[in-house]
Image 1 (cartoon, rainbow, N blue to C red):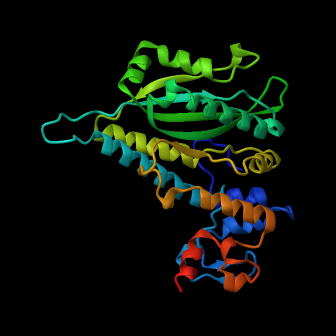
Image 2: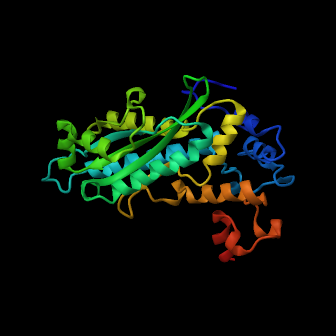
Image 3: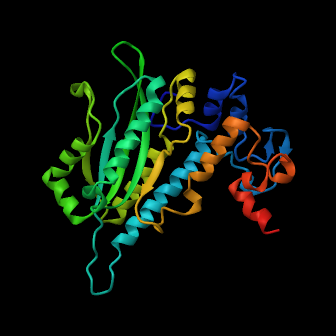
Length: 309
């Protein structure tokens, strides 16, 4: 297995994690055959519909690369739109974006799901407070998971949220004056041993020039693409199990922003995950082929087609 965390694994390498186990072998086939016309899951067939070529597996590198580029492109469109002058007489107004890094507390792999739930609850509580609600216009929340060896040589899992936040001028001034990070530290989880913990930190994201936005777009795409760790097989499968239903990327902000297109929605991928990890029916198949589902259970990209017939 590849151990370079900066380089995402190939589909074959990820599929190998799922090989050799009766409960996960079918997922290995899904990932290995992603993008190919010849499929063996859930039975041998040739796919002619281009919408059914992707496997939509949460950990497929090819599908994740597509998601990452779509999210990064959507973020770029938001920043570009904010930078446009309201009229020819108005000066170009530079958008105010701040990155807030929220590390979790290192934990055993078996406690990973509980820790994730706790951290997401902290974010939810903070969002409801006037300080954040009135000063944050739009935010893109990214989740990255890292694995390292603890002092007792046991593997420790650390989830870290990176929030890319479009803020008011008041919040930008708070960042410049150091008051923003003080508020973040107050609202975030506190570890039992803070001395060995990096803690939250924040910084201003340069977005004034085209080059700066290009750099940000590429960096966000890479962060989303390589959000999960490369570890031993058992730890990886344990994390995969606890990742179920968790959005690795989330958007907070007003309805109707460019973050909302169906092309980058995770709802479909989460439905696929529920399907292939529970029933194994094969949600990439139309009703006429699987024969054991109603219209309400069809995948997103077929339901509209059948209704239109």
